[in-house]
Image (cartoon, rainbow, N blue to C red; front, top):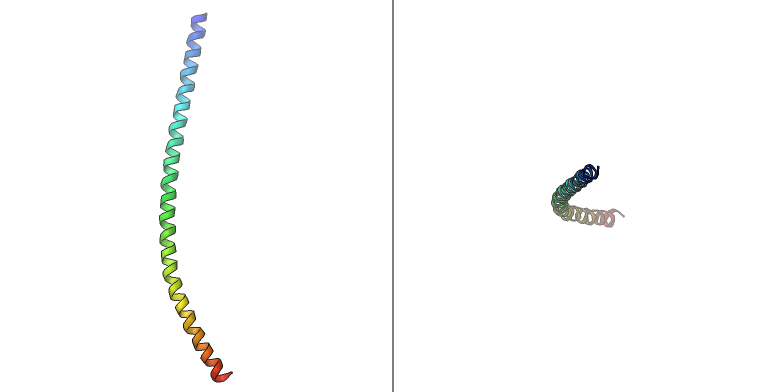
Length: 78
């Protein structure tokens, strides 16, 4: 009976260890995938910010030009 109990405990311990190792592997894979997605999001974000910054310069110039035009109109007709 004690040999059967010992064998059962050994099987249970091995099963628990295997489950733990599988969990660790899954967690590490998830962490690597997550890090990869974060890097891709940062890359997209940086590209978006570059695009927006370029457009902001254009928009600021456009508004400055319109501001001058409206100022001139107000001086002439105001």
